[in-house]
Image (cartoon, rainbow, N blue to C red; front, top):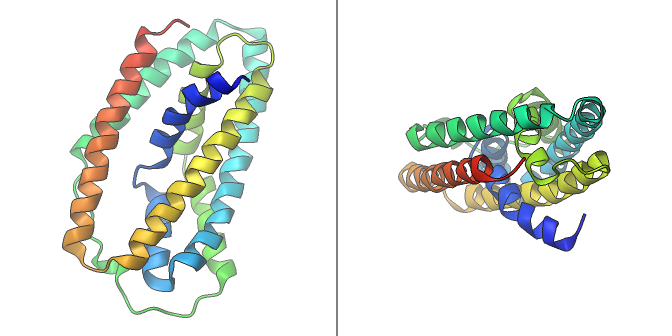
Length: 207
């Protein structure tokens, strides 16, 4: 995978990592209660969980596409539809009620936070949809599909961990619901519009 291909995929990886979904909200909530460092360390368990899903998806898709390359076209349009739907959902998403997350700090073992992160990552079916919908758009009919998929997965995991720390720092530093709700709405608007643009780009690109 060339440096150009990596740079081309990087904006998409960032867009997939930054929305405030269940995993990022968990890091935010953990940081709000226990501090940014414990939340960031616990987030390594999420990266391990997503890494496992990436490996499973890479080898599964590689085997299927090796036998039926025409499925790549179907995956492309599935990706276009899914990312457009995701953008629409983000634009319409209401600001969350964060009052439950702002409770008294408690002493919780780090392994408990890590278990929460790992379980949330594996229990989120959207992760598989992300990887299945977006990654093949940057691979095409390359012979080394699995290797390229894994390289892209590694790039995504770096972006995911950076986003995780971003939400952990926000959760650790902010404590007023009004400010946090406005920030969440802003992130959803920007990422929602960006996902629409990404879907449009994929629809107009060659398979």
